[in-house]
Image 1 (cartoon, rainbow, N blue to C red):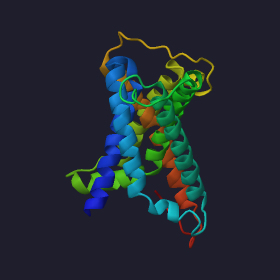
Image 2 (cartoon, one colour):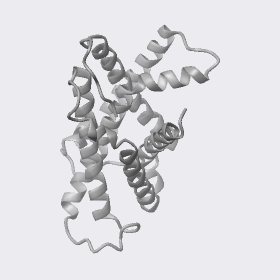
Image 3 (cartoon, rainbow, N blue to C red):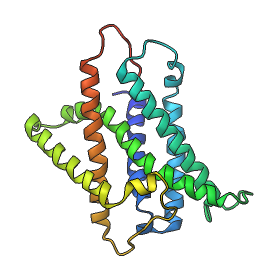
Image 4 (cartoon, helix red, strand yellow):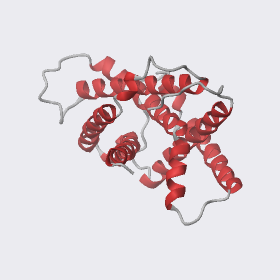
Length: 228
């Protein structure tokens, strides 16, 4: 594997880990949350620099249903991440406190909630659309492969658990700003919190992975597709 490809994978792994960490804001404190958020900003910039060819191909080739879906998800991820970065800088009390930013806290709080909850799910969907590539890389390095039926059942279990988490943690309330304040259980064990969020991420990966497989099967021969 080429060094650039390895770097891309490493950055994507770090971004996923940072995203999970940031969702547990109440478990780690404001200072660490801000520093990891700043690191996420740098990783996000690096990700787009390394994938800059994606922008050059936007108006090239024909658009299949799969390519349209990927473009929509990627565009929404970009919007949610930009909202997170802007709002995070405005509300910063430590890392970006030196910047002469005044006012706008109310809007920034709303954008931060929207960016966090939509961004987490959209990033999970993005991963799902690229999950075949992840599976392919894992299979090359594993001495054994899980039986497809076992893999499917495991995926269904995780997806079902993730749906329960989505409901239990009231995601719809925050995704549509029915509340501007997020309920946080500061006494919650970290391991249970992250098991929940991994399951929720897994449920969106599962749904979009199989949606992508269906769209790829139905793709019209000869149409090109450009992925980021």
